[in-house]
Image (cartoon, rainbow, N blue to C red; front, side):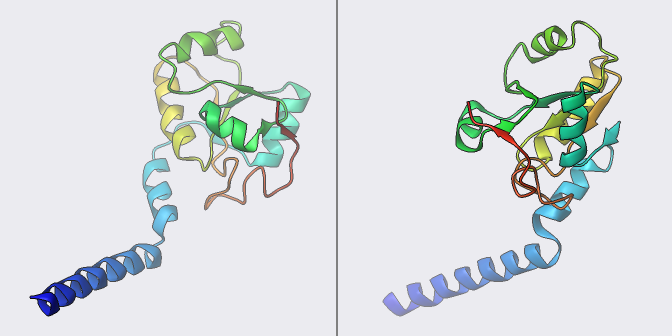
Length: 156
């Protein structure tokens, strides 16, 4: 009985390893990101451009991650922190944009997945100039990320 369990466990583990290797070979998270961002409306910019535009006031940069993520890494200097899970997210964004739904708003998260999903929701809500920062704070297929690029962080 013990040898059967061992063979079964080895077979299951082998299937798991082969499946994981196939996921990585197919592009892994990068392939997943490509699938969800195919239909993104609006522009995309890299982290250095987001920093420069936020610093100059040409965009409103919003870090949509959770408070525990802000505490762990900080946020990009110039970014407003607005947790996308808030039930009043759109109302809070309206306050930050002073009711101007045509104001350029750039969204940044950890790796570009949440910002990509939120992008289209905000367009549907009437925001007309939503911009994605797809490399995020930690990096993705779109780029190394805010932190790896050594852009300034607000750790307050």
